[in-house]
Image (tube, rainbow, N blue to C red; front, top):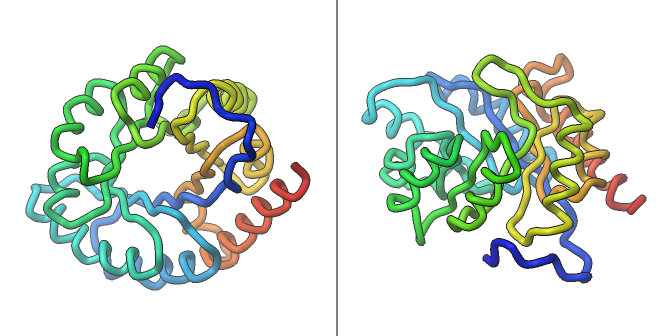
Amino acid sequence: MASQEHRTKARRPAPRLYLVTPRITDPARHMAALAGALDAAEVAAVLLRLEPADERALINRAKTLVPFVQDKGAALLLDGYPNAAVLAGADGAHVTGIAAFRDAVPALKPERIIGCGGLQTRHDAMLAAESDTDYVMFGEPDERGQRPSLDAVIERVAWWAEVFEVPCVAFAENLAEIAPLAAAGADFVALGDWVFIDPRGPASTVAEAAQQLAQAEAVE
């Protein structure tokens, strides 16, 4: 993908959903919830977040969910652990920060997807684009659970959508953020693990998220 070319005036594809799991130790415990979420609406990708463990345990956990998610029509990306992603047969990995991104590229490219988040500045985002990331992510919580304001995320997404062709994933902290992030130009809207703790259940929550996304596209 061209990293710094202006987007063409042609209409971009409709934004799609990107689902982020809770941190998982026992994949079997999450299968039903994940199935409900993936059956409720079209999800482009699932970011599998695993609790830290030795590499063999990480690979085994991922292997349980890789074919399951892929059979539902979504790509499965591992949060970190690029080598484990390759050995587990995942579609790729998501890494945080430019240093981790550059370290992960040799293991994943060109066969697999690599995305980059934790981009604190515009310069960092541009470096990721120049280094052949498949997407950038804006607005996700950091290790302390903190994130920029919604206005700041919208500003960053709008800037990126105006200037760059590399796809952008915008992290929505709740259902109300989906429409404004889509309107700002996000190619994908990420739904955090709040989907899995919503009292209505993940299926209902993802279905509503898809509806919000469709309505935002219709308004545009």
